[in-house]
Length: 377
Image 1 (spheres, rainbow, N blue to C red):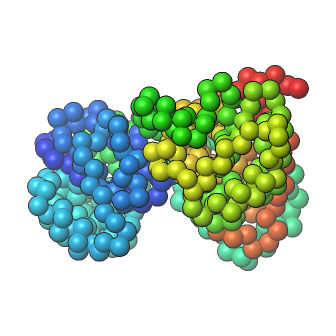
Image 2 (cartoon, helix red, strand yellow):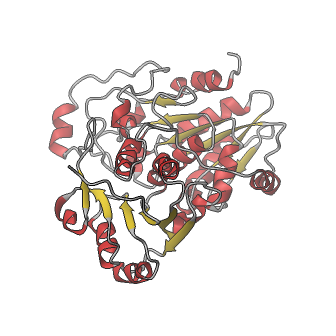
């Protein structure tokens, strides 16, 4: 019989390294707080994500490390914090090794390859888990002769809810007694943040704002063509009382500028925020949008977590694994084309990019009307 261990007094949660993954881990953190109300929880996170955890009720303290810091430096800083348990959310060997080098006596994480040696509790894969399968060039070319008809514009959200990545983090948290039942990812935004972003970027509450996020850090195989984003913006911005907000990081500035140039007309209000927001400002600006159209990328998860309805465009990746929000949430829609090579999980398409090239504007506009209650014109 497995002994029942006491609840930790001081728990370190080694956070994930990517924005979207961090948002998908918020249900696990909420369940940990629910199960361990008297435990002091510290989140160890890359510095670029530290501000994400402001106002999050599950976290007592945030410990940030810069990307250039070595695992030995991180472990040395952890060693003096007197943690009696650590939960490792990433699957990387380094993340488990950090806690081992820090001498944390109880170390919990997913069993994977040789990193299992650095864990005291290696958690077996959960039922329903589906590994990501990256297709080879040969496999893609073998599959592509088949016909590829588009799915209906209002195709239902993915039905295999058990495959979603948020369940992985909940499964790990369950090793500490947390309830693995799913919750919607959630991030808090306080009224002062909303008011400051409204004033800074002139996002007047009298206007309905369509958010567009045309970039994707993973690679071009996740990016819907820029002319489609521009076409959606032109149509919706012509509706009475609507405007457009363009989102993106520093690497998306040129892309956002091109889309802005393609849609800017005297009667259209455009706010180009690409490269101009901090992480907290991005969170608040997404919360002010009436609907967000986005590729599968970090801001997609942010928008869903702050309550904005999301239309997510999927090509090379799988909405079953990383769709927006809680699987099945009617506030969000996934749009994709049914091609035999997708999902391929490639950064760059080795053929003709049919998964997103065949996805037209006509698949998106009706969903904007549906999610916002805007009448068909």
